[in-house]
Length: 165
Image 1: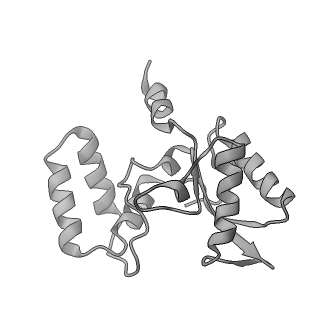
Image 2 (image 1 turned 90 degrees about the vertical axis):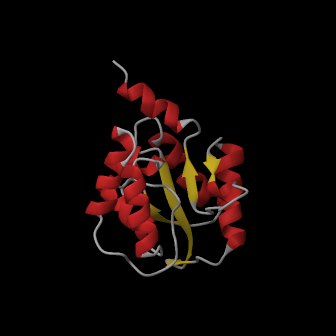
Image 3 (image 1 turned 135 degrees about the horizontal axis):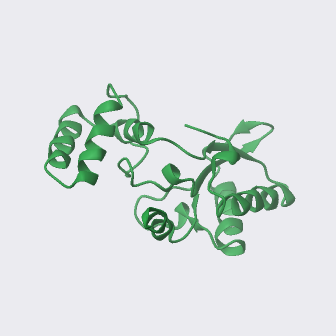
């Protein structure tokens, strides 16, 4: 998993840079949690907080599907042992914009310390990213909001276009 801006896609990187600049310009500070991650890393995050029964059942279901779903199952299996903790993602391997360089996760920081409970600061970040820069902000999702997440709208279309000849 990376926190480096240099790993972001060339279309998204300038927007991520502007987001961070505007956050600072508003007197706020951001800690970069994630930029990009590999499919196996996404699989490990997806497995976190889920039961072995759920993970095994999902892998079995994916194994019966398309080549894409079988690749998802491979990444889930390669992710290794289950990890305790809260569920932190709903995206299976290859379903996250982080894997293609089209997303960034941020956390507000005060005096260099991440402030995970400061919804007011997350909302200030969201207003900058969504309202000023046109990014999709995970904090505005009606179900399963992700307050630190920003992604390029229509990133899936860009991924598909990359694959076409």
